[in-house]
Amino acid sequence: MSKFSEQVHIAISSFSQNVIYYDLQLSQKMAEHHYFSFMWQYTAKAVIEPADQAAALSKHIGAEVIFTFKVNGIQLMSKGIINGVESVDRHGSPAGILVSGISHTIVIDDMKKSRIFLEKNLQNIALEIFSEESSGEFYQREAILPTFTKPFKYKPQYNETSFEFLKRLATRYGQWFYFDGMRMQFGQTKTSKIKLINGSSLHQFKIQAHLVSHKTSFGGYDPNNAVNIKNASEKSTSGSQDRFAKSVGFNQGLI
Image (cartoon, rainbow, N blue to C red; front, side):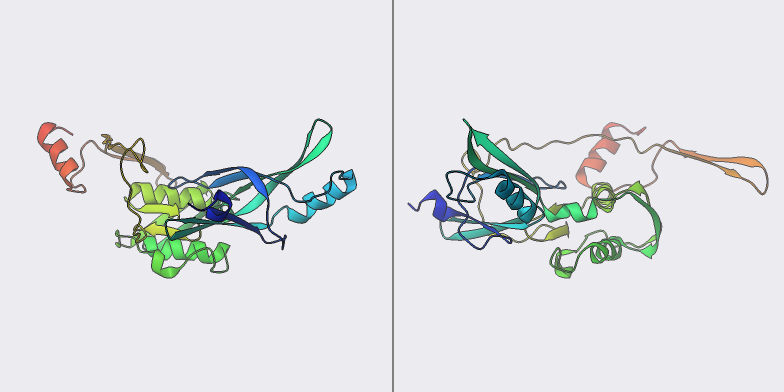
């Protein structure tokens, strides 16, 4: 069996030497940012001057980190951006730097925006947003393939970041939306040969279904005629027609 240091390798763009670390923590979720942290022994010096510590913090903040995992002949990679560095002292001696960071998805979650996309489908919207915020290393066109292809007459993004907006669209139209560690996936899952075994490599797996009302009500004001506008629907005339929707329609005819 290979050593842990051979199974998990860390490279930092601002540091050319081998990264010595411990207490590595990595959190990855669907439709969320990825987070990581680790203690980094960046120097072999027994005594580190405060000025040298400050120089190290300023040098490495904002650097890119690449994690490489090798297990049973399979190699997986993940990357992120260092957004936090903290010098750590223990018993009066420097212990290294506590490094924390986040995935590149943060680049589309920085500022709330309000705009309208006209005559575009999910793929057009996602590609336009990704092209605005990155140079291409953040996503690949072939990975942006929504299964819902119908174009919208208009689709507003209102007072939300681009990440929040895409997450809302993915939830509303049943699309996969996640960062695979290196690139964005929107619409469909990435092909993988990894096999998960429930109870061994897969834990706390469960299936859930929730019922959400489709009743709608919209209101507005017509300044030309000085009248209020209101329209509502207590029952959806159409739906996804999947097996869950058909079951609800059969069991609850009034919904």
